[in-house]
Image 1 (tube, rainbow, N blue to C red):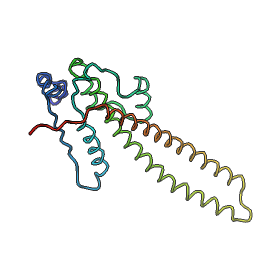
Image 2: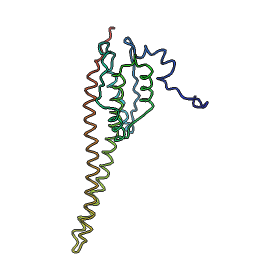
Image 3: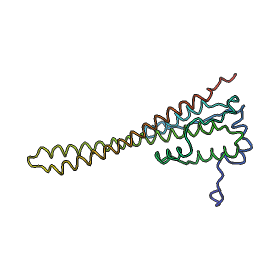
Image 4: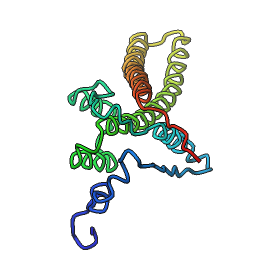
Length: 213
């Protein structure tokens, strides 16, 4: 479609998906999720995230008794979600947009719990990647801080060193440390809170019952 300058219809919003939606989300439906991973160490983080996502999704089943329960699993208002997206640099993605479009077009068939659960898991994966990336960046910055502080301490060993320059540089390093470490700490706190909420969300999803052979 894109090659012919026509609008692209996402798979989840296609006519075929709409026709077969009962097969995807009906009470008698069965879901098979194929998690593609790589054995290479270069893809270790992506592999772990994929396995975590698949592990969460496999717990999801349709619960007829909860069909009327439309309480949100994650206790975030739309404004809070926007704030989280702005803070973490996560937001819209093709997968999340497709699922949202499908839910809007099939409000009666798609449980709010289903959409919210997938949103929560997707956000956890993105937030985890961001925390690890920021932690790695802070670690690299810490090495530079040590080198700068070592140079400052060596400066103090001189007989007639510039005290004002020493104090100014040390203050600049400390302010940078406080700012960067505080920002990372706040992200880790938010991440831990989100993990706890996501854990509670997963408990609201009934574990799969063994299928009769």
